[in-house]
Amino acid sequence: MSLSRRSLLAAGAVTAAASASLTTPAAASSGAHGRRVQTGFSRLAADGYALLAGQKVGVVTNPTGITDDVEHIVDVMHADARIELTAVFGPEHGFRGTAQAGGSEGFYTDPATGLPVYDTYLSSGQALADIFVRSGVDTIVFDIQDAGARFYTYIWTLYDCMAAAALAGKSFVVLDRPNPASGRAANGPVMHPEFATFVGRKAISQQHGMTVAELAGLYNAEFVPADAGRQVELTVVPMKGWKRTQFFDSTGLPWVLPSPNMPTPDTALVYSGTCLFEGTNLSEGRGTTRPFELLGAEGLGREWAAAVQELGLPGVRLREAYFSPTFSKFQGKTCGGVQLHVSDAAAFDPVRTGIALLVTAKQAWSGFAWRSDNWIDKLTGSTQVRTMIDAGASTDEVVAGWQEELAAFRAVREQHLLY
Image 1 (tube, rainbow, N blue to C red):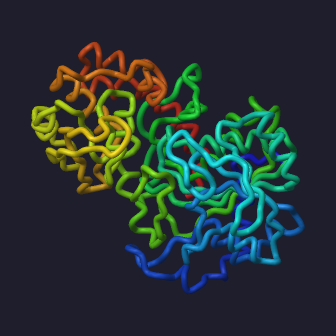
Image 2 (cartoon, rainbow, N blue to C red):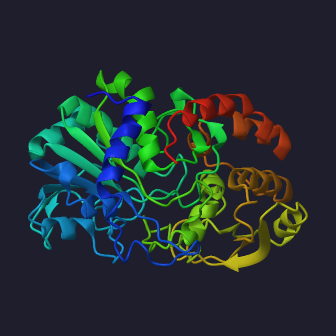
């Protein structure tokens, strides 16, 4: 069936009504706001998996697909006779999370459950639809923790799987989890279609400010029909108790790193801005214990730190820092640069901060360069940021350059918000 926003909300309301009285002790545990957020999986399980009754189920997930007791949902569902779990689909980094950036685990049989694990990484369209058909599942369930940025690939795994499920005639269920950077607002440049890659399939903003269930609704309405010829049969199981202004540390939920370089919720706070340094010759902190919070390069002295400390960027303190990455850029070399310390998450603007850091890095360090493959254009979604900074534009001028497109995306986004 095709689900409009109204019917999408209705589907969520049915699930919510079915499980509203099933508040477990774990779900009532104290968080920063006095109550633990209930994830989509918690609500699905509390309802006895009624939504999936009589169906062969496959799950798209990774190590973040956990219960409140940090058991993996695949292990829990496999042991429960009320649900017929027959397959697992692994994204980038793999189902059990053993692969680094740009890698996956391939096809294998999971030793813990005996289930076949299919590799979805870099598969899309009919090739991915064929995997779903070959698996024999009726319904595909998605449960992965996102980081809130357009270039975090799990939201494009979500998209690819939705479009492939539509092609394969499979139904699709999204179990919601919090956006760790909150859902306050969309921010940053909107991707132009000609720059579509796996770090940005469709025209959404750099910081999308949505949950995966909300993104699923937007995808199904705006993008899936163009690629699959029709909408996917979509149902979402929303969270209970999450508010748009909430950051992850106030949810009461356990954090499991969703990828090797996203170790803490603090990383997610800065990621939608500082990941832009992947597009430069500076280190974005990979190979350190604080990736995306540490930025710098060999040969870079204190001049950049002094320049950024004068900016007075809201919600963040910038410390002169030195580090030696164990892998990636400048492996084993001493780098000079800065560390970001978010002091007020509500006031902090990660995208504007990322642009300000790029502008000052280019001004303060003669060794600054973009990656030769113009990766920065793929991350920002167009040539605009790179060319404006090269032309000497200020942070305010760069940010002003994307406001019209951002306003148009915000209007579309508003139609698909569930909280």
